[in-house]
Image (tube, rainbow, N blue to C red; front, side, top):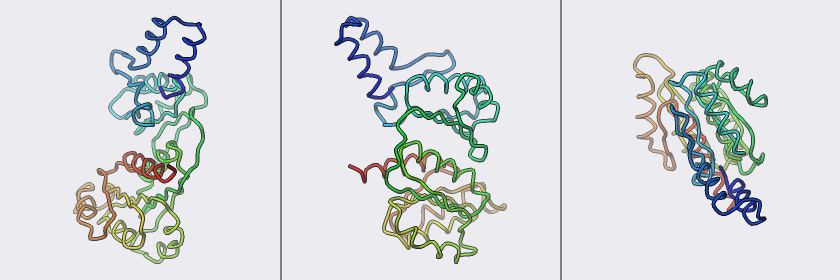
Length: 250
């Protein structure tokens, strides 16, 4: 529930359509909804600027679809991450306009205003990093950012990145997604004067250690201005980029 929902309740009380007690009961229902297997935080959008995001992995498709559908009733953009196609199939029966990104494994329900402010640039080192990069891109877009994705600009062919230097300079915040040794973050951060968010991925051979090697590489980067999220956490990077991007509009 966002400010619009609260305003609607208060306006109904002001117009005399509801008593004060009825308004209080309505506000109480908006705070959290107990489904037995989940307690949905409907105040998340008011506190954080974005509705509760549903991590679908580990939930049954039926549970994930039900939670997403309940969130959609409250008029804010809704995002489900790590969702199986079955989640989207079930949700489509209840919310026909929901969207599913097969690469990112993300379910999207658009209910809020479609803003496109600022400039978030998501770069991924290789095509294998695309699922995480697209998760970051979709998250930033839902938070109102104008966002773009540059694919396959890793350091093994650094001329591909250098040909995009002018585009790097234009961005307000950059998200850099890389597996293997994660070197792309240091290269990008050494070129720009804007915040860089590193996302290590679990893409790579044995000594890559399922993302630990690029994680440690990004954390020990000598380039200033780098923040690093957890392994494969495209959502976390996109969310942080969305927050930083929005600050430029204040």
